[in-house]
Length: 384
Ligand SMILES: Cc1cc2nc3c(=O)[nH]c(=O)nc-3n(C[C@H](O)[C@H](O)[C@H](O)COP(=O)(O)O)c2cc1C
Image (cartoon, rainbow, N blue to C red; front, side, top):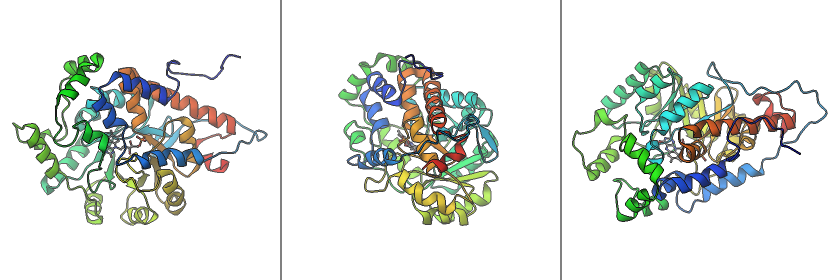
């Protein structure tokens, strides 16, 4: 029988693993390993997936079902679906122009898009492309002057949601990146050059778009800098460990919505609440920082009941399908974010990749809702 599911994506790539495989063949190995890898032995990357797969939902076939809607309101803004694009640093290295591609797609489809401080598009460019709809993920600069300047730039550009990160007190130890020379400073070697030459579509696009830049940091960088200088600059630029004092200062100065990303414990979630934050993203950075840590979906199950009444609780790390989103929502998240999945899409299909991922996630999520009898994303918790 013909599959009657309504689809709004290219059926040659009906799931994220198909896009991941296409991405692997289309971009150089150093870019793929940077995107795909976890830290250390990659155990937390696997744990995120394994624990998600343990979550099962129960259908209610004989209940009245009025149909389902995916729309979700976060911080007073209604989005088309309960998922968004997570912040990814150095995006343009993975596929040239990818932050612009994903930001445009998200604005067109009314989905949240979060720009990383260390992405390759400037916050001003993304604010213009999305007409002020994007969120900004703020890495904390070491200098007080730069801290205030970056905050002021985000405010002036029209961002209403600022996302502070608390799960990167140190650089993650990532063997796949180290092996490819992707440590700071990045190193070009014969192997990397050969890999790039073997990926003509990526190379041609990179030559057209230009070498990826840390566009948000350029105003603060010395003019002439070699790679070693860039490494030293990046090392000294950020004060990686987040503290209550830093959050309190930003809470005082930031007039808009403030979200803490990387929350892993009830204690940190309660601290976020006591400091006046509006929301949290339960996340372990996609398994890229702490290999011995718990999965994000297991953290979510403790955190959502503890603070969900007062804070908007969102989640990322390990989500690869509409089914996974259903699981995250059933465990108490109001929305899920995806980092790698959207980037696999763009690396595989270029400018069409973001819409492909959004389309297949929407289709998969809607199918789960229709199958369970779940009328809207907030009702998923009743199906566990
Ligand atoms: C290549 C890569 C770079 C990332 N860079 C950042 C970043 O600059 N800022 C940030 O807050 N999170 C960053 N993250 C983490 C993502 O925002 C998100 O937490 C993670 O990707 C979610 O897991 P998933 O990839 O399994 O969806 C990065 C993730 C990846 C894969």
